[in-house]
Amino acid sequence: MNKSRFPFASAFIFSICFSVCFLAAACSNNQAGPGFGAGETPVVVSDVIRDEFVDRIQAIGNAKSNESVELNAKVTETVRTIHFRDGQFVKKGQSLVELTRAEESANLAEARSSLDNAKREYDRAIKLEKDAFVSEAQVDKLRSDLEMAQARVGALQARIGDRLIRAPFDGIMGLRSISPGDVVTPQTVVATVDDISVIKLDFSVPEAYIGVLKDGMTVYARTNAYPDRRFEGEVTSIDSRVDPVTRSITVRAEIANQDFALRPGMLLTVDLVRDRSMSLMVPESALVPAGDKQYVLVVEDGKAVRREVTIGRRVPGKVEIVDGVKEGETVIIEGTVRVRPGGAVKIVERREMKKTESAEATADTAKADESTPTPTPAPADGSDG
Image 1 (cartoon, rainbow, N blue to C red):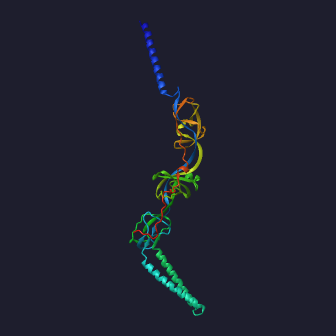
Image 2: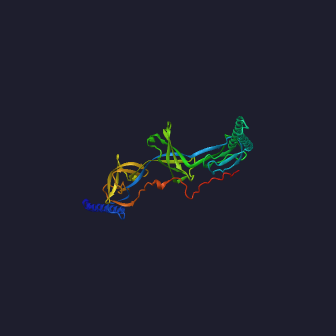
Image 3: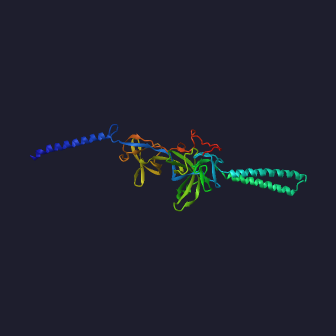
């Protein structure tokens, strides 16, 4: 009786095994998907490119004016007239503030009259001396009187000049802190003037880089105020001392700022270009580490070939390849875990690696656009109460 049951049990087990194998084959076909051959692994690839590698030193810098000054009066006096507006562009020598000078002007008029009289007396004496009507001693006395009168006129002119505040250089006026009628002293800050046609950018660099620092190195700077803009400048000076606390040295660069986009006090991120070279580059995701070695999977004739590479420097998203691949070869950047060396692959996407933008294309040297009007100085005789 037991023997008669075995044929039915064997048939049942055989049917179950057949069903499982059939379902497994069906699932395998569904996973391959349409368009994939048997055993082909879908992958995403990118080409090995030759790109410019820029070795940078990054830092944070503070913007400073090319020239900056706080204007003060030389004497204690009352403000008579103000000849500038807040934020106005002024030219060197332009009159900015005029202090009361009525007494000095009257004294100057008197001194000029005395000078004219002394000059006439001296000229008359010179003519009479030729005919021996005037002694040499009298001529010397009149010459001395003339020189004293000239000196007094000069002194009064200087005193009047002290009551006129002028722009020491071309620049932009800051916010004035005085009004007509105010009494100012030599300690009173009348206003500020900043020459921002060129911005000085000071930043600190670790002492380890002193050996590569030199004048003329290119710097690129960015600020949150202009997120889509990059400013280009160059190193003009390097401090003579290293800060013993921070172990860093201060470097100064200058950036052209003809459109006045940058202002003193702004914080900028700085990229100091240490070196430029053309190198073979692949995406970082193409690397397959194994122990202390690095490999990439190169697609050749529809198959993945594992190849050892020597890597160099890195930048975000990209790595330099010193040896192991050639320009134009195709490497797998997605699907490396599923691919076996020598296995068939199917390229489902080819991604182009973004090349480093050239300095000429991206660096904004902060020159004014043609549409940006150049500031013009106000008339020297203009006033603003």
